[in-house]
Image 1: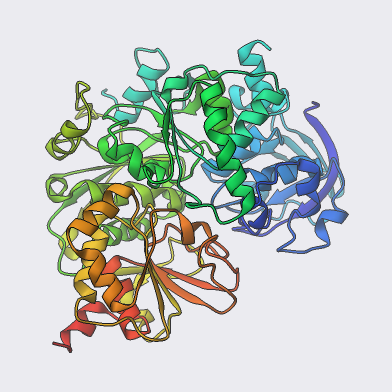
Image 2: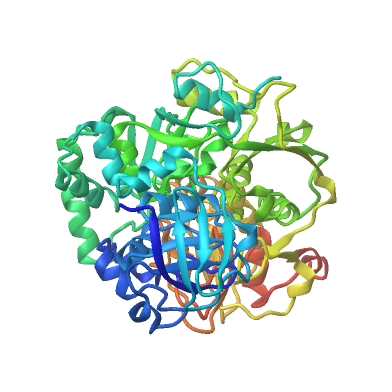
Length: 169
Length: 422
């Protein structure tokens, strides 16, 4: 996986929940785990047309507590299925961990992110070093990179691949 | 400089002398707690990836809890195959339907969790296990990998010490203590931190209360919560395990992020209003809201403490004709004790529905709320959609407050409500 991304920004507000925000909770109860299937219903409770507009390589820009609440895996597998990266002003422990484990590149927290980009701005992000540029505006931002072990998990594609590495298979 | 209890547990299980706050280390948990409904998918996922065994099958404890008994043919088929799958993977600790309870309750009752242990698993409310002085952060889906490898990574968290003093007043239960602390601390402050309960008031808080204190912490986004183990812990665990019990605690000079003092005599019944558990308000501000469902149950509030309180309120009274009241003991052990104490009569005579232990309504698959419904109860969280429709409203309270609403048909301050009635 490449650490260097170039994609359009999709701006989200504060306190977007994982359950019934990232993904309808019905997919949790139905035990759906296929990222491609889940991607089609991502953000359906916020805007049913959104998943169809987001392209692989795009970058979600979250506000405070992005993906808050119970970090059921379905929401994060939906992000994986969409092929997006995530920047967020803040993410609680559980959602951040679930994002990393799904192999979705993420930078959080970043208090300076608010107002940095508008919907559709072209962003260039180095997820490894924490460098973010808004090409549309010509502005830059530095965010703290994740600890090395969390980056290792993202680098191999997520928790399952990391597990296989640890098991030597 | 000393170390916190969390640091000591992480150091031991990561094979180090000591760890510092912020270190990211790989630990081998002592126990993995998991549930019947997810295991078939977990095992299949591992097999698809070429993993045919768990590193430590004897550390894995499986509970039937989210859907007991099965409500769909799909769940029934999962459960039918599960025993064979567990046998093939060498898992012998399986508390199946009838021997079960909500995992976070039953695993403690059965003596699998001891002070100083590191326990993890898929379900979010595993911090409940902190009641005996164990460190139990949830892993959600990542538990698959942890069970396969026998290890998981942890970032060494800061700890907020919560020093409890004083005695709670009438109508105040452990749920109120937990709810109040949430409101005062805020999710921002709790995030990624461990809440450690201690202080002179602890001696009067039994294991039921301690479970609730720890359980509620996760919904304000703490990493986990832990109660300093003491004589209450020993008295509770001695009949449940033959293991040697060590009361591991934080050092007196441990590097707490902060120390929060709470005098329990200052508290009153609190309610968490929609849309989130930290939206905690005084009961008086909600009086008069009509309710459709009252729920006593879940891993946050279906223990003997809750059942006794609800039964005491209900005796000689009836559930309001407009209200459906559900009483669901958290485990078979609690259910049995409630029967022996005669609590079940009080529920049934009053017109409440009593079900066997399951996560049920708090998982949204039993008695789902529909659009416009209002529920007050002891469930874990009130985020929209948790108990069914996203257009239903969920209020979280202690068992007395919820039961008073069942009788009145609306939210009432139980202290006033019972004050004006004989």
